[in-house]
Image (tube, helix red, strand yellow):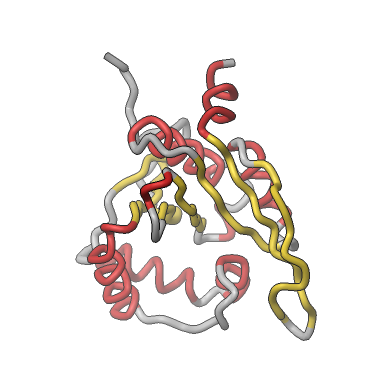
Length: 189
């Protein structure tokens, strides 16, 4: 029997999101007012959301949970909500899923929380869900995220050139992935 806290890392733990936690919904709404956070997270136009809107979106996401696994990220030392991470797939039968992650407050960027959360999620993906591959996309200008994903075991698999527009400039999207056998090798050393 494995003696492992499946949803705990060295710095963070993954928890089930609770749309009735008003503080968490307010925190997420605050993150949404940071245009850099929004622009690093998604190609959609930046939009402002209220805590009520965040609660509604989370409730809708949880209803669709059949096609994915969604978690909030909390810091171990003080239980502060740091961000979110999730796996999703339209076709789960091939053992492949996409991952998305966001660390909300700028003061928590670059401190290893995202890398630790991704490592926890990959452990869950490969040991609990028995996935074959986890894939993500990241914007070329998000160098900090690319480094974090590489630390967690992802490799660059390709680039879609000039895929999206921000502030009058076209940017590339970087495609990254990690295979179960590569993850196992990295975590047995």
